[in-house]
Image (cartoon, rainbow, N blue to C red):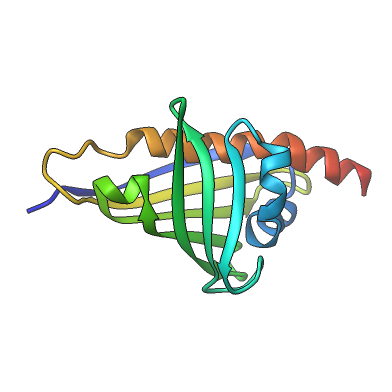
Length: 155
């Protein structure tokens, strides 16, 4: 039986929950400009930038390695949550289940918390646990905060 688990962490952010959710929901094309040291490209294969069920591929750098991730998007506007459901790519070579949920929870008028939940199941017993991917997605949320704040302060 393959090992599975759930990682959960909270990332405090200075930008508003609404602005963060908007960026993660419908402005993924801005990621390479905003956090290009992590994300080098995003391509829509099915749907639109902001559509539930859209399928996208991400070119990114994790632990100094260029990787690709193909995901199907699930959106929950009420909870301000975006789920990336893994379909293909480097991470899916090691895992048969990979869901990463970013939920933006208001904490003050300007600040929020991004609750990052990763649900995973190894493809093979000897596959490593996806700790490096949890660190990666947590750093995406934290690093996007500066870009959100710049745009929030312009408004």
